[in-house]
Length: 170
Length: 389
Image (cartoon, rainbow over all chains, first blue to last red; front, side):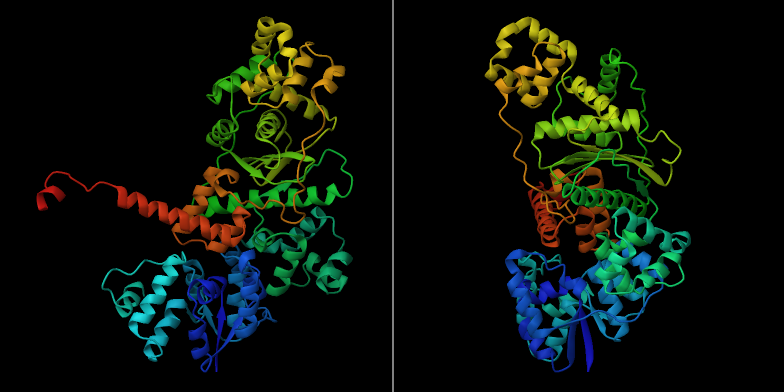
């Protein structure tokens, strides 16, 4: 079974922003979910502290990498542009050979440079569509919900399908 | 970059000394042996990513600051500070040092170099102060009455970064001068006092800092201003701030015009408001002019400012990005974010702001930009929209 290592943005999108727990439940037959103490520490909103404590407890294993994965020059470069949550997610993803779930473009670019496998919230939503767990309209409704919750993605245009929307973004 | 990494061990020792942690104490906090810390500082062993992040957390710094140390402010806390303020002030200085580092990193990533502040002057005599002050006021293109925002803006235009942070109550301000200049003022104090502190720290930058050889390309000299200490440089900075905000000649004209009516507390309050300073400041200034005597103070003042205590760790938590973060640094950092060179979390780290506050701020920025776009009138250049319609 493959492992998904979630960064803070993805946790927020699957949590209160997109309310995508149903997708997590469906995907749990294929993946184990991880996040890191560094990513967890960035869930700073005091009004949602209880929600995320329960959310992480129900779906995620929170752990750090136990062995060095990057040399110091690489780590110094990452430290310049990414926060500790993203760095620990990349490190853990490399250690457990998992897939990093990243919704920040800077982090996705670095994951690519480091030859790590990565996806994002919309990529996982697309998997849900491919497996026919959700209809195109349901996926699109989730995207609109993410936009309404102020996740920084373009709002779908009128009449656009999720498939088209995802293809354009990709 | 190679040199920076090569010097990780010395950097680690430097930061540990800055936060006054022994190897044994740090080892105890991290759950490792003191000899391992010693090996890291000698460079005979290298910490893993997890250990480095743990190190940074226990030292109260960011990993970026630990690993990328081009700018190294030198801290010279000139006043004796008694516990428990000492710990909070040390942490604030570390925060300030990290902010200076973040400014440097942001500018490098943006392909820019922060410009140095070029003005320098000798303090000279107290008699010469009005003309020196007047010259500096003219150079900064400021009126004789200055507001906090005007002075922030003027200093920013002259390449001094200004941060308006929550800091421990006894710490009024911190200033840096080196490869670039930065001033930190205590957001927990009233605007009138912050204005005075900003002028005071500006005096340190102009008259006192960056005069020895240690301050230069990669070393920032620091002045830390603690309330109520007797350092001669602090006295000079106070004298400059007084003249800068309350010119002697203006006050003498006021005294000549209003005479004893100035002794009315309401009148004193009005004069203070006119100069954008506190009643304390105007009282002290008028005492210097021998209009008041020190013994008159009890008739005008009943106590001190009720300042809340700042949190102990990462004291510089900003809730209002627009008013607390230096505008030029904020715009540079936001450009980097919009160009997708840094992440949201990095922006939060640089702004000393909780992530959810930054996310709200970014969302509002996006919303206001969309609003501007939707409010813009349709283009009507020759042969364009109108012709097509």
